[in-house]
Amino acid sequence: MQDYGVREQGHGVREQDYGVREKVWFDSGGTECAAWHYPGTNGGCVIMAGGFAVTKEPGTDLFAKRFHEAGFSVLAFDYRHLGESGGQPRQVVRVREQLSDWFAAIDFAGRLPGVDPARLAIWAFSASGGYVFRLAARRPGLAAAGFSEIIRNCGEAVTPSHQSLNCAITVSVSCQLVTGTHGTPKASTG
Image (cartoon, rainbow, N blue to C red; front, top):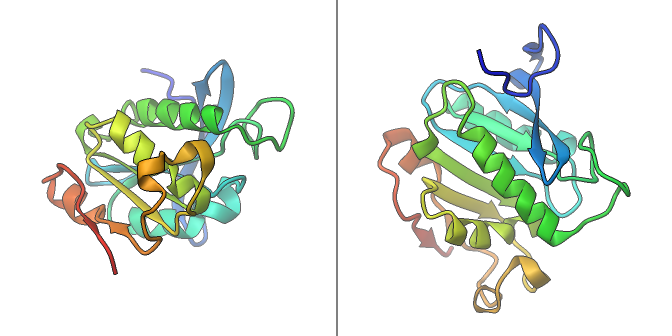
């Protein structure tokens, strides 16, 4: 049996409001990133991280709960240097490293039990939502990409051609994953 980075026996602790989640770790650039894995039932997996320097605890729980209730597995992770993840110095945000953490999380999620690697989606909010553009462009095999409240002019995270996008843009995630009819995510303003 493959070790998926779960360190503790009895790791499926029932949380009062969030269902069963297990703490897992994955490697990103030689540093361990901490994550919560909420096992789902439909084969799809939504990978998410908090905004700019927000950890998974306050940043992803409510969102993860909604995706998990819809049957998705969720992998919610802390970037390097933040939260339970490793890395020195602490509380440092480096955009290139955070993008690398996303790629490592996507690769890790595709190997989780019960997850179909063809049904992976990424979702983020705030400044991390700006990463979604770059990630989706570099990983065309993603089933979907979604964000909420991206910030304009996020420096390296958003390419100049994306900086003029209105913050009200939404990207469909759930329908494509639930039905298995993934493809190019559709953007809408509103």
